[in-house]
Length: 285
Length: 320
Image (cartoon, rainbow over all chains, first blue to last red; front, top):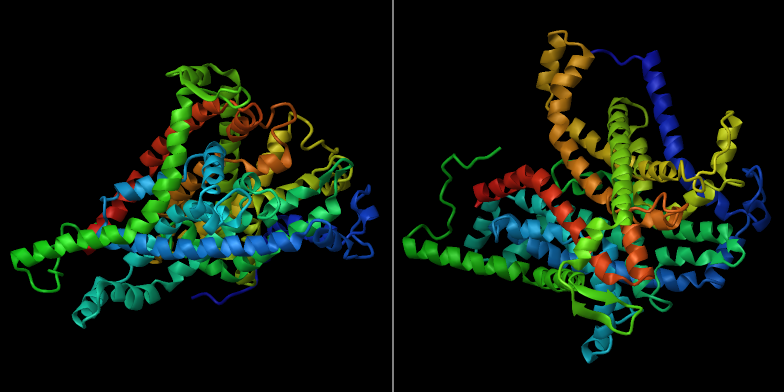
């Protein structure tokens, strides 16, 4: 073992890393900075770095554009769909990991359902929910156009394939011996799943929840097509600052901060758990 | 790593008389089907119904601006139209142009950053937590912020490059460089993805071969070429597939950055489908093109993922 010494190469590498971080963080910094700019400082030449900060843009976003409604909608939609994805996804994923129904073919089929470009299926989704919204069943569950239920279902369906693939390797890593001995102790199959398997797969479930939440939070196209006002989500809400006079960049930046920052916080604190999820468990991060 | 050839211990709970084993296999099958049922119902309804709708429409005449709406059966006419449509092919070409450049740059930069992250000592954890941030930002919302930064007169990019003596550019308004600007945005958002996964791959490498190589006095380049790269290759293949499948479906960033313009210089396939289906209401032609695209993606992924999936299935069988 060599004693760690501070060499020129090492200093240079750290400086290079700092420079790279600076580049990757600059757009986020610029968004936050712009969100605090007074209206007359937003479009200046050259752009200003120092100014009297103001909350006007945030006031505009929350009072004129009703961002508090968008936030409430997004929390309900992202939260509920994440819950459904975790429940249905973990049941299915466990089944594939343990019993392999369909011998891999159903797994691949599930993956292919995510390969259709969203733009090609958004019209059928629109028609399905338009018609469902007219039925008593659809009305009871809020499954119509401009209703939160539709987006909950849509995002659940989009996230399920990913979730099933993602949790697969976590379930596979659980030794079957544990399940067999629990069965011998008199647990039913379902009890084994709930009391033995699920707690051991907790990291995988956490990763799945993070990704489902992020996807639902950041999704644009379906949120845009399936909602108008009442069920509008925050990401779509950011598009609402284009006026006759042009784009209101200040309020837009404030809205973008409100939209983006929660997911940045999630990613930053849960980063170490995410890597394995990003590769379907092929790499243990 | 397959353990299929190793004789497995008998894992059935109640011993192994023939009828009991058969009974167990049957109830295993029933239980496995029971577990996947809720998810499969949702996926089948909401993946197959839209797909069936698209397939149906792709064989009919469907112009939503005409009072006839989805009308008569026209056979392969829409596919014939798609394959002879110059706009379709040029949008495919732009999609590939975008995907190849974006993914190649992301792979090279991402792997380089992964090596750097693996090498540094002082703020490793913080750097990992910070580099992931672009990944978590909504592509649509942060795309609008980039549009603001790309602004030809008031944008911060022009200010920054003019400070170092580079002439100002009309980043999104010049058809020569607009695609490059979109690629730059994508590289910003997705290079961290490649970097983090390559880093995890690097950290999972076994130590021994590298120690042996060091004892043999192998050069750094030789170690990289003969040890690091081959061992990293499976991980990099997976990243490549994931990024490519995602890059060819680019949509949100196009909406917020350029809306396909100027002219059609950044009109990738998804955006052309949007224009055809949602503005010109030619759902028939748009559906035919989307399905052609879907077949191509499924075949591409199927070929590249086959090994990966066979390994997974082998692992499951070995465990049973």
